[in-house]
Image (cartoon, rainbow, N blue to C red; front, side, top):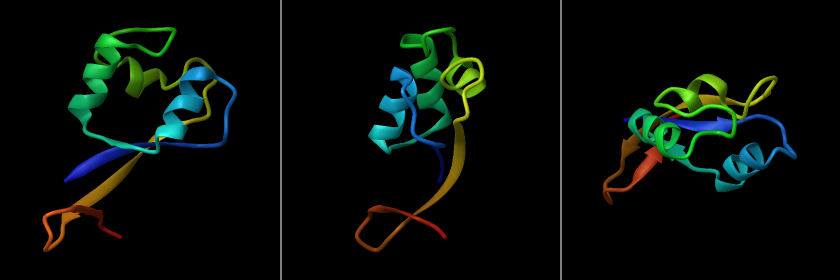
Length: 79
């Protein structure tokens, strides 16, 4: 299962700081929904989050995370 995690240096921007604090993984569909419903403060639409991240000159990015299901039916990161 492929997911995406917001990554990069610490930030004072409210959007970036919140995304880093959540430390969560997202599906592509979740990112599209987030972009369409919440936006990132500068743009709104299905690709707003994945395209602009936290806005112009944002140093953050979504890193790809591969997950596998273990024997207890829990998602774990595949290294």
